[in-house]
Length: 217
Image 1 (cartoon, helix red, strand yellow):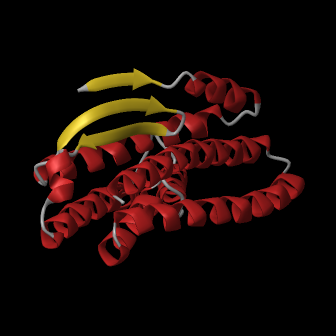
Image 2 (cartoon, rainbow, N blue to C red):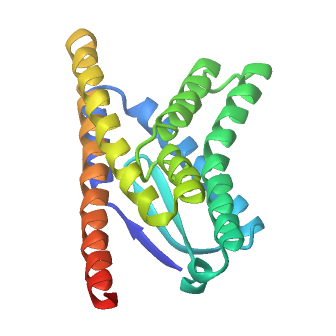
């Protein structure tokens, strides 16, 4: 299993420090790590093997190893694989919502209850945005793959991710104007980074698909 640290995390630490939101950022980072551990535990329970763990600006990302043969099984088996991916993707946000409920129902002395609830709620909502590779994007891609096949699902989720990011950019522009919070801008830029990165991967796969189709003709 590979391990990697995304150096952009240090940029975010500096930015949140100078915007006087470092405590909130650290809190969210901790719960984002717990969020990813939820993915890891559920993935292992579903007999999926972790392949790479990466520390990102908003927590960990965990990818699982999927054997090529799993994509070549009968349709029902392929759908089972997609269902497993959907369950794993749901695990993280569910963990954050459970932490919100637990924090609401217990008395805390050292850490403000509202900060715990606020941090976990934000992480859950952020990750459920239908942008790939966020959890919401993964869930939607899995549903599309079951109904339309893998290649069509990649096309649809790429288009949905771009449209969603454009909408979020418009909303965040208004928020920056009224809230005067530069952190919103950098979160929006991070979403664009993810979308552009995944779009490049999608375009490369499409070129490969077309080359294979030409060879098969």
